[in-house]
Image (cartoon, rainbow, N blue to C red; front, side, top):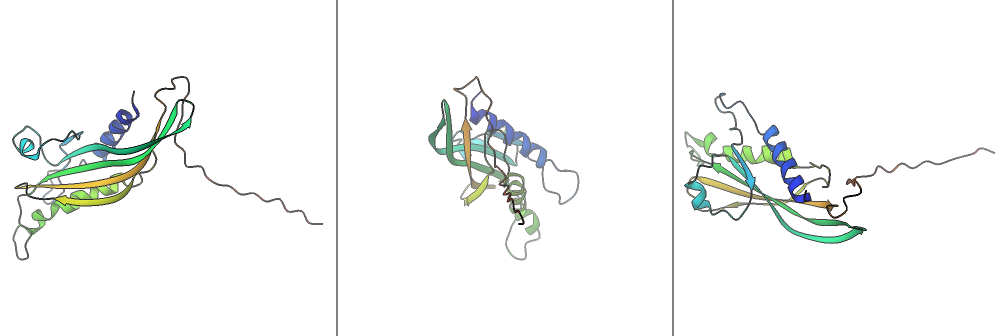
Length: 178
């Protein structure tokens, strides 16, 4: 199986676990309803489809690959997260629905908490590097967040198991008293 497929499944399952809330509690964040691979979906088409919100799309953007060993490559690059949140509130000062209008910010913060530092077999800890809000999508607020990581692709070497590791440095000194 491809390293990107493994990482996609791992992140998807982790987000589903971390972003499932008690939707019956008034004022609570809504649970994530849809997680998918980003495939340049047009937001207008998203509005007319069966996708439920909030939704998260995961994209693998530019990775620079280098050889790490025989049939093993490391790729440093960006996993881009698109959160799509349906906003039915108004965020302006004095609005009676301001809390609802700003709830997308809390949802994005929950996504950040779930992903920042996340690592697994084949990928190093995710580190948020950029974030921007996409504009002009009617009631849908799209936030695009980039997480830098390093992938370890061993798919061409089916004879060995490899894992990413953050080795712990242990320094020992021997001191003898004379």
